[in-house]
Length: 147
Figure 1: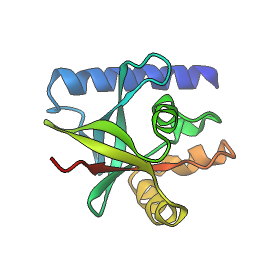
Figure 2: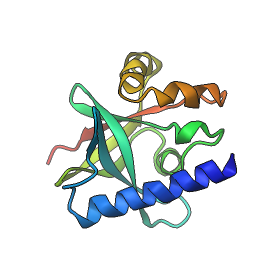
Figure 3: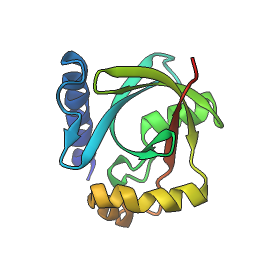
Figure 4: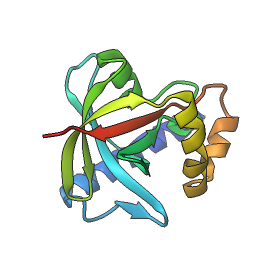
């Protein structure tokens, strides 16, 4: 089981690297799944940490999910958000070539129940992830900051 998460972490790093190196021209979509880059501040290192995540749109925000492949632990990017500013955390978002700052917040239970089926429709593997853990996968809403 541990090797699965290690492999996923390596693939995620490669995905993020290619996304950045080619300025968002590659690996932004796979079928109906769309990917963004989310940059948070490391809770211990205080360094910027960037991860590629599948997203869906939700009104004026983008939504990402903290599934971590069904791991019992939450993903590091989610822990960074929770520790740095539990209610509203500033993050950087990149979709394709476009970058902006956003406020990240955990979706309410009502919002999560509305968005969950949209994530499963795009990537049915989320149901398999859910069956591996008792952890509820938080959904995070990313709302662009007004400039």
